[in-house]
Image (cartoon, rainbow, N blue to C red; front, side, top):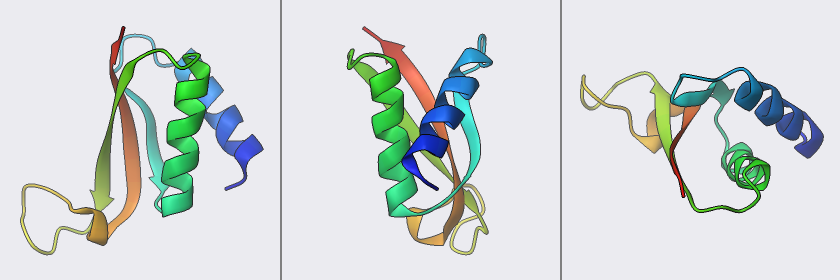
Length: 83
């Protein structure tokens, strides 16, 4: 995804996510997308101290209760705290 697409995606998701912890769901996994999404969310909050958590989604080969980054094909982003 390009930076403008991610920025637009983050803005729309944050605007519509009142009452939810997960602000972005089902984003195609790549290191570049992960970094760009984190930067865009921090920029949206104007670099306030926030806690971002990432949940990886995909096939669960090693353990039936959690996903690991190496097996992920999508990810979700959660904002836990705005200080």
